[in-house]
Image (tube, rainbow, N blue to C red; front, side):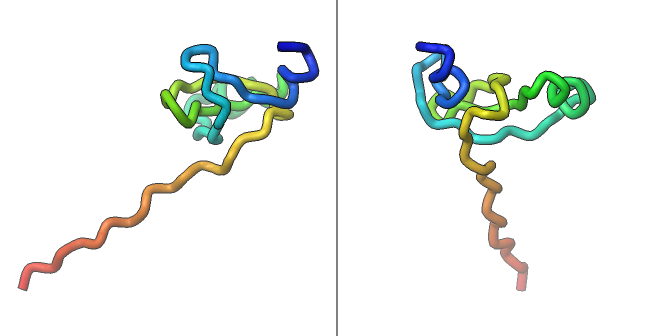
Length: 74
């Protein structure tokens, strides 16, 4: 993979998947330190591994879980 591809394409080091989703920033380091280095957490769409990549790498928006329909006891 060339340097230009590294900046503009996602490839999971584990499974080789090419689909990435944005992942929540969990810790203070992820929220405040990683952005200083232009990094963000991504999640592989195939194996679900979390990886830090440059902000230039395209990623799909996070898929929010659909609200479940609660049954009401009658």
